[in-house]
Image (cartoon, rainbow, N blue to C red; front, top):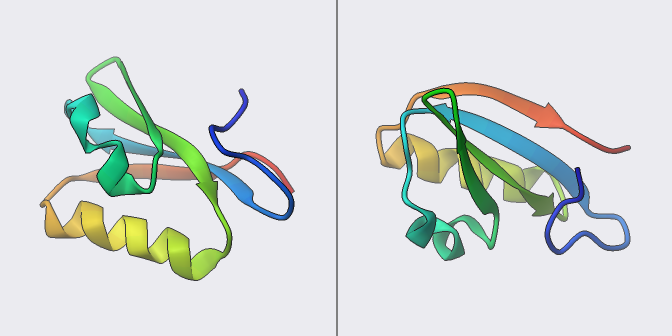
Length: 75
């Protein structure tokens, strides 16, 4: 899998959440792509560092979404 916007030292992640999140939220999640599979939403994209990742996770928390797993896909 290739992450959208991957370049340089950015780190690629897949974030799995329970339920279906509409693709219109992509921009709010720093341009992460949004896909759906088996009752889950999968956000995929890159972040420059861990503080940016924590910011995305905080947004998920603020929306009351259930985090299932976070996968680092490179480096």
